[in-house]
Amino acid sequence: MLLGGTTSTDGAAGISPEVVLGIVLQGLSLVVGVLVRTGRSWILCLNVAAIYAFLYLSSLPNPLGLAFGLADLYVVGALVYRRAWFDAMAAWRASLPVPSRRAG
Image 1 (cartoon, helix red, strand yellow):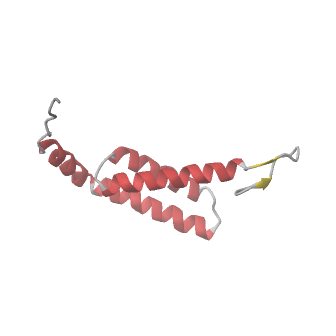
Image 2: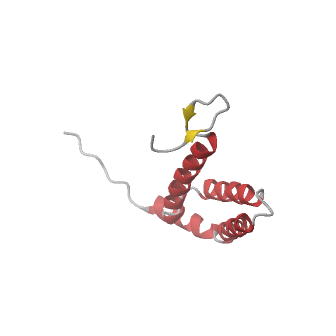
Image 3: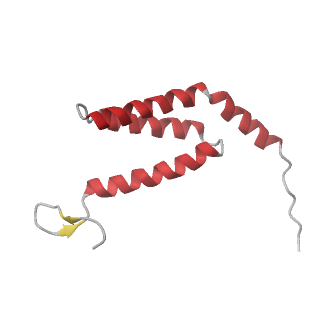
């Protein structure tokens, strides 16, 4: 098996829920990163960064969790501070001409 081992109480082999959640959150992180780089989905990016900050900060007194949690709080602050950039990107995309499709 590629991931996981025996983690359930009855001894059945499988992937633990924590591993599955981690994989899903890392995939979500990649998607949100692409959305931020293209200037889209400001509120989704803000919510995901806030959820990450909460999850990391809930692992206190772990110093690594504190560092990642504070970094995610910084991202939340940066997203709020740069909201005007997301609005400008949306206005710029709206001003682009829509390509017409030819029938045929």
